[in-house]
Image (tube, rainbow, N blue to C red; front, top):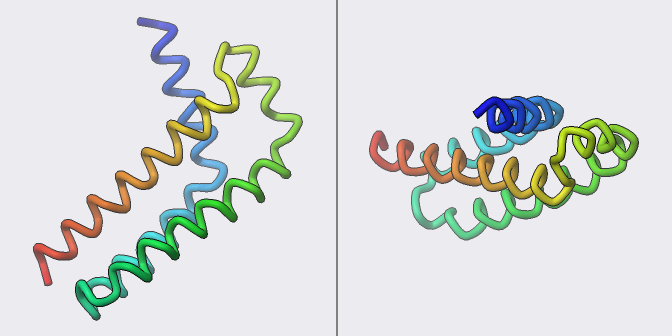
Length: 103
């Protein structure tokens, strides 16, 4: 149990390093979806995917030496990125669903 909590804490710490920009992009996409509806969904989806790719490459370059900390906790680079990008995309989809319900 303690190991899972440490893993979740490490994932949260890693996500905090880029969550501001990611959430900002998500909110921009959700606002665009709210204003223009389903006609904008394709563009919004690809914008989110592309910005996640840019964030991946940017953060990967900046945090090169910080991956050793996570590896010492038994968390690989692949798990870090997979978990945080999936969480970010699920958050994006939930925000889109909420925007659709309230528009």
